[in-house]
Image (cartoon, rainbow, N blue to C red):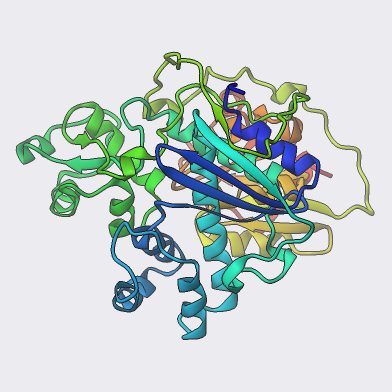
Length: 435
């Protein structure tokens, strides 16, 4: 039977019915395998995850670890050859990874494969149920590390929307970057954030390197690198070549919006392989990266619709602080104390947004300038979700000229807190909108 491929509905069906087993998907000769226990994701990988993939996520975990382990890993495999999950077990056995680091690395590799699975528009798949499941090679041994599907989908939706602002110019993290004419690097570029000197240093690394490989070199996430380079590609200062084989067989960034919201429609899981076809893609409006920074018209102001929570002196209010500075997070937590507030700190908004949907905070403190996605864009995306529609968001920024009482509604926030601030100022701001 042939029908539209709906990866989100397929995985929601598994999650809603608490199935245990594994889902195998094939598209363009690439295979994905998703292992689930009682509807929760245990592990996922695809057949093109390689030594480069492992290096990239090791660098996100601890960049100094990559050079130390490259020699050992090169003895086991070569670039772009499928690596065995047993490598991770070996890293732990040789004391190169701690157990907690192992868990973080496994989750990162799982989300990497799961994200590309969600980008698929045409595939064959089959599901195999089991009564109980234990993943091979001792990769995971307890169920505490299982990933909830719903918050994971919401987190990846935010990432996808950030990627889509760069499409169709950037369509894959595996596109290769080249600079044909270095003399163009000193031309002014609208929305460009890199100095000519930095660009000149980067081109020595980037000739033929993929966006993701540049992330490895620069110690940055591939999405952040893509956002930084986008203005220069758009204005033809840099050029992008197609991914090399076999990475060109991985799915591209979908241009059409994906339906991440819960739907009553169910997709029957086949017990044997089915061929799934797609409808033709439609063109979508391309938004510039500058729109991500100062987007003021896409979402109607909703702050005035928010109602102040009723005072409850016995309640411990949950506050989420989002800032890429660990020092700032520690200071905010110490200022707020622990008697009246339970404070959750999020240092990487792009990879830690899953926690927001699990915590269900009463208030969010958010820095404006962050890597991957700025506070303006993030706050507006959050306000689209019913879960955060009435959650007060306070923006923190060192640029006091950017915010005033007239324009804060355009940013999707209820108030702003200029840096530097005192403990008294912070507490007064929080109490104004919370208790």
